[in-house]
Length: 124
Image (cartoon, rainbow, N blue to C red; front, side, top):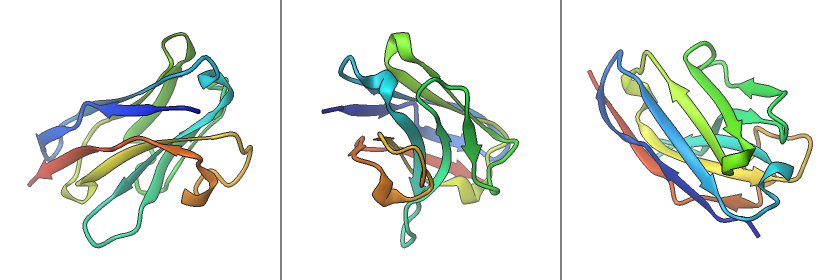
């Protein structure tokens, strides 16, 4: 069992930056691939970034490539999402998820555990 808690969201102007955190419980955190997803009102949840258990492999959606960076500190059971050059279309609730699967990282159904989400609002 893994419990996840996101933090770091807020209101920011376009062009600004934020750092999101996802703290996990349990000693097996380092065995999970971690993903950051977002869900805007009326839209489906979509992956923005994912990172392998060791942190050696990362993947990003095309819409955030070059602006978002995912990294993790397994010693602190935490995965981070650094976001820069925010755009109004980045407004959404951001969720982190954990999965034991080694593929299908962009699919919501791949993930076994989810946090409660943190709201990011970007004003123009």
